[in-house]
Length: 140
Image (cartoon, rainbow, N blue to C red; front, side):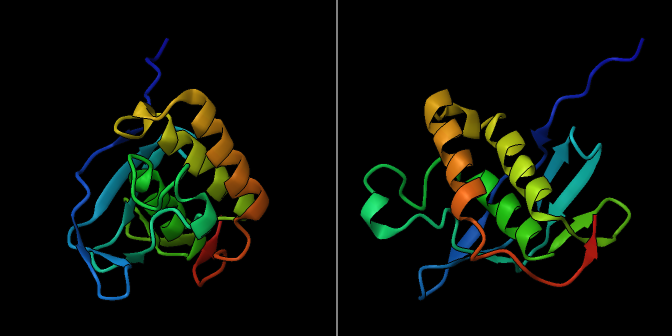
């Protein structure tokens, strides 16, 4: 019987804030996905807005919070920017991208967010996350 391997962030999140309010990765953000059974990397230079929550909701879910790690993984997956451990750039279909967000939200440091808030954020991504979805890459 083999041990179950849990999802985990394998690197820290290092970004530079751009004048536009966006953030550029200074180092790769590396995530092990148990769902996809592999290491995924958001590459250095990738630009993210973290959580794309509408301004009226920023009091509940500001763009920058403990969820920003999961948001970077989700943004990179949505834009076809994730790279596998074999160096293949992939573009995940939306439902897998959203499940990857939910998985990333379940591990440190994102899991410091209450379970109810994590569930609400996941449901919002599922329902309203179509606007940011798209990009080149291999569909998985």
